[in-house]
Amino acid sequence: MEALQIINQLPATKAEMETFVKSAVNDLLDGTRDILEVNIKLKVMEDIIKAIRDNSDVRFAIMDEASKYEKSFEYLGAKITQTRRTTFSFDYDPVWKQIQEDIEKGKKMQKIREESLKVGVDPSTGEVLQKPTSKTTEYLTITFK
Picture 1: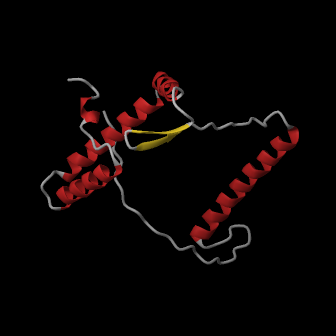
Picture 2: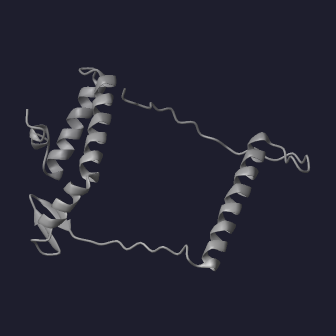
Picture 3: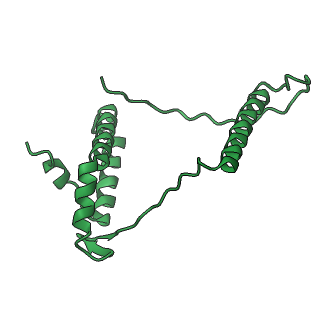
């Protein structure tokens, strides 16, 4: 089987995507599909998509192909815009380095304070502190063997 055959069967427009999602959600919620199996397959799809898009050769080929068009163009119902992002490295500057160290120290101090608030007592003074509100979210982690 050709690897991209499955991708070619997926929706290609926004309207098709919305219809696909509604149909998939309905199938999952009405019990016609094994929801855990589908969840695992969705995770597989996420990992596959990330691996393909993160491949440097694929990224280069995509950018090369897009360079044949205007900076912004429409293709198969999608608007594609070529953009750039510049990142700077400031770690050569001693003032910047000091600020970074101060930020890291502040983060550590913040973490210590958060732990004290969770317990409800300031360990250095014994002062009783108001505990924070919390929210628990349940989720599954999926790892492949």
